[in-house]
Image (cartoon, rainbow, N blue to C red; front, side, top):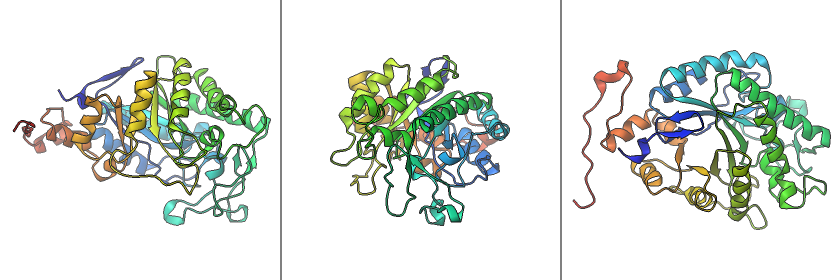
Length: 364
């Protein structure tokens, strides 16, 4: 069996393989509600054999959305539509996860195909918040610095969202602390210039993330996994570094976090990111090696051989694919065939199942 298709048990949940659908914003909601688009988009990846499907960045509050078109989980009315999707995913033998998110200073923007620039209050936008009153760029809204009361609301919102996620049938929660959104803004010195208990030192800057984790754990079952996505580096001098990420991961491991989803960047527009095949895998490998916590590798992972190599060489414990899953909803079935491994196909599709390829050994 290729290690890519070996099962992985995390707490009481077993993933049937190491292939994860990475959270991908669809910008296809109204007032946070899921739609038939989400059912078909996510459901087809379950039919395609993914072990875990993590829903897109889902707003824990209306003001925490990136855009007006974001998925949400800030009110009970959102639960029914989400449960319809998680039930279908479970029927296909996959696990449903959700990424709980607050966009911070990168909120109140148009969807990418509408311009992806800030929406003013006059245009229907909303007041954004951040650790410090520093906008992401000149095209983004001017945030206000969160007060102590505002910080407590953020924690409460994440906690309430986790309660709804459980009721909606999710078995994995991922806290979004990457890509320049609120929790990343707090731990990065590039965006956090506070002088109170949430700013300055490393310990202070990670405080909000730790408090969010505690809040979620108060309501999230111990039997279900808790992931955290981080940006392992800001790719900018004076910013968050890979060594900071190792230190944070070591702390998160002691706090009961099960897996670190290792992305990078997103906090400053000027960062020079060397995008290329597997360009973020090294961070997952470093964190796994130096802390022993489970990690996920994400970013330009596009082929079965590449994904298999990451798992086989223990650079990470799972691979998260985004764009490749947009190109091929059935990537796991394709990968199994390419790697010469027989996996079950949906009974409705079995008549189209091709013969297995016989992998050519390197010796040949």
